[in-house]
Length: 173
Image 1 (cartoon, rainbow, N blue to C red):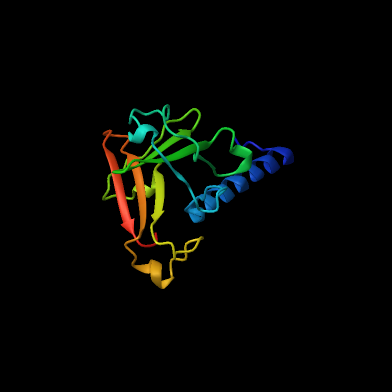
Image 2: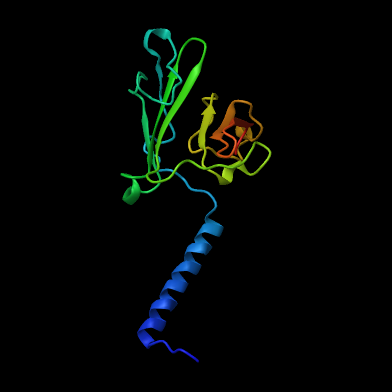
């Protein structure tokens, strides 16, 4: 027995199919996502209160938030999907703290450092200690190409075994 769909049902299923194809194409070619850059590439590290680093306990309570930076991907989703990042320093260390809001889902990254960890949820920080490097970073600039003064750091937790990772790549990423 054959079933026939009405022209309206056929049009609806065609639109849904076309939207699905477009979404898949965007996901496949989109690759990376850039966060809204509200601070023109700068993030300020604030002195830790009393010269003592913050507690590392999963909370930004007690951190010096004067230089905190809000991060989001798109204005329409900023209220739900966003992060707040803060840098603090003491004479001996630099501390990076981030609070991420992803309602109704946990951070997921089932990769170790030898796998394609960049396909999972991660936090990234680029530190440039060469004042001659201009923003935005030009990966082909001679003072950037092999610079040990440009460090790209990725932080993530393997969501399968709970192990934490830090990957540091020097030069442009």
